[in-house]
Image (cartoon, rainbow, N blue to C red; front, side, top):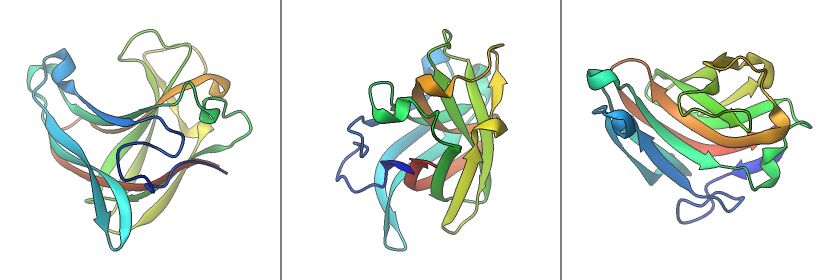
Length: 167
């Protein structure tokens, strides 16, 4: 297993040194709004993604992104998938992966997961990801970015991530 983040930093830095940041649909004129903050639930430190996903103006997403291109996690060819430890609000979220083949901001490889209102470890095998607006197969030897995304419908996002790893 390769640990990417277990929230041991006192900031937005991952264990690999790259920093988490928030991206919303406002980059394309949408009106979703949210925050990415440090949190703690039941004694576990977490990265907390909260906000309102709205569909007006062709919007519909909030995303916590982590650039991994210049880290050891960029070559995931020795691993089976991505592991997340999450606490949510009984909603469905996505994990988006971007590779060196992706040229447009709307392209990604996507897998969905449910996040109940309790701590849960989720394993997303690489073969469960679907290409979105890209014809190429996912090249896991050249990962650039991981996005944890509230997307596709109007809802309240409330998701904590305590751990992220390749398994």
